[in-house]
Picture: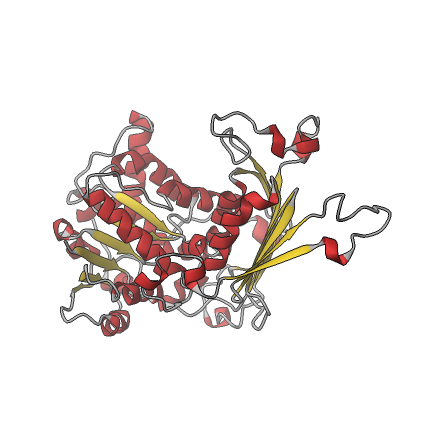
Length: 469
């Protein structure tokens, strides 16, 4: 009945996941894998269960024990996620992969090509912002604002924290900020709009945190990561979006004056992302504002409150030659700081907030339930699928391709090429080649113990740099 867990990557997110595992009696942390001794030592100290896990420095050694693993947590540096999914996705194991699932166009292509061969694995992507209590409450209230037309997401926060080897300040290891950080927000845009991005344009700042990130102490002339951005987006809904009824027919009662308009392209949902990574001390770190034709929802973090406003009707605002009277504007406030106000199972889960307003705790509850459902013979249904993860990354990559205020030096930059070892590059090429030769639906038929893993030529120095686990 136990769920045997291996954690691949014991840095900040690996440690946060371990902290929640302590609260589940049916979870056995069986293996840890990380080449950094300090990260492993910290991770071991977090585990409160009497049986301590076996520790590996090399992912190859961990893969030898795949038959003894029910759940793999991938919490390694970003550029490693895709090759690790390619290795482990061939096995009958559940995988919780931290975001982003990819950081480059080539990695996205490889994941899409390989995904048919992941049928025996259950992949859940760690984009836990969906489960933040205030955001979850906002999502449930969406029908009250009518057809959604504007979504604004703003984050004003501190710079990126220090990590092993400072990989998160390297564009070819992190994917740059619009992928590394903002895939969370692009996922929310898709979720809140029930639509896919059609076009986008971005403006960014780079290098404003140059001294904070200690780039001046490096001798490799690095490209600084993005420090702030505005991204404007528009969305085209699929045929089965929220404005459609149960039979798939367009529900015109919600469209009002828009149903007969000839300007549909100017009535699609629009989005605006604002990011600032040098804004310590802001009153709100995150703001999510959704405006529909009938009302407006505003969620604020860390305040963890949602504000709902309904547009006044002709009765409450009879004189349209004047602004609406104060009594015509109805405000409803939902305080989500008590997890039980949002989730009925709040008393059943570990409730320390971690770094993400309790959302990781909720994620683990849903993940364990999905694993148990699979064990009962039903399908494994992730609440955040591999496709969701890929789509969010694609939006970040597209936003970086559509930066309109590039300087001359930045205009000459090539697309991100993820840092890679010989074995990882072999896996990407193999996945893409199989897709090209056999079609996208053709599964990758390779044994992870043959050339893709045996041709590893990394030196000790590369292991210490964290380029391969």
